[in-house]
Image (cartoon, rainbow, N blue to C red; front, side, top):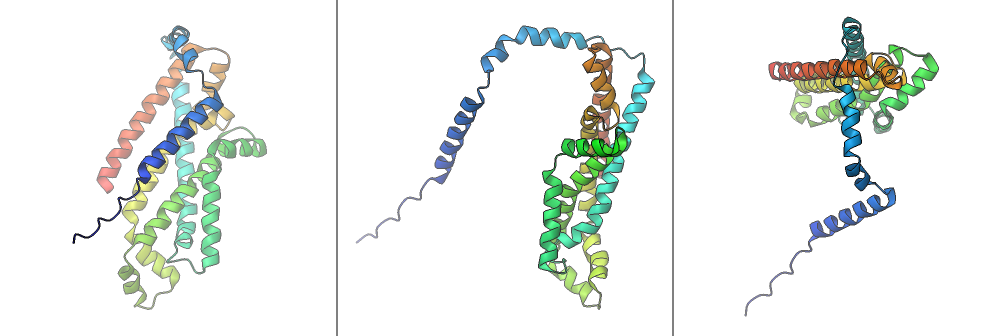
Length: 258
């Protein structure tokens, strides 16, 4: 007598897909997104974009200097993030943290840094410290510490257990274990993550300027508010070219290092 076939497994993928579709439809209905209006406004959008077709580079060197300032804000924000992550990441690694409570506290600190958007932090620092590059630098550094610290801590947790055991066998303490086993083992990953953070910070530094946190974004916001489309177009072109150049540079550096 043939044995009874096992029951067919339940198709959870189909259920999840249906739930996602239903939630998407509910969101669209609730938000009342006017897609029809978007298509009907095609002519107005085209006319508005045509105002940016005559860029004014009469203040080119001033704009370039502002872009350099923006890149500097991103660079120092990345440096601050790397410094903070250097100290926080080992404590946030479960296999290196001195105590589970300390591990949980540092993890929640990193979660808080990630949860606070750059723009919100920039607004807080602008209100506290005034306009300028300092609020932007602090906002970028603190927010990206949440990401970089988490990435580095997880990399340290993935290091082969034998590496730590081998170094510990020489009689090292926890600090020496971190310096001679953890960091050397994840050095290439740390460089790759840091380059990614810098690449991302250059983009965000431009946006933070819109709330007064220094850089070329302040000038762009001013020109947009006064409907100086020609100057705004030149600023957008400089930003675009700079971001593309940094993206290629970052990719080249990753290939050289990793």
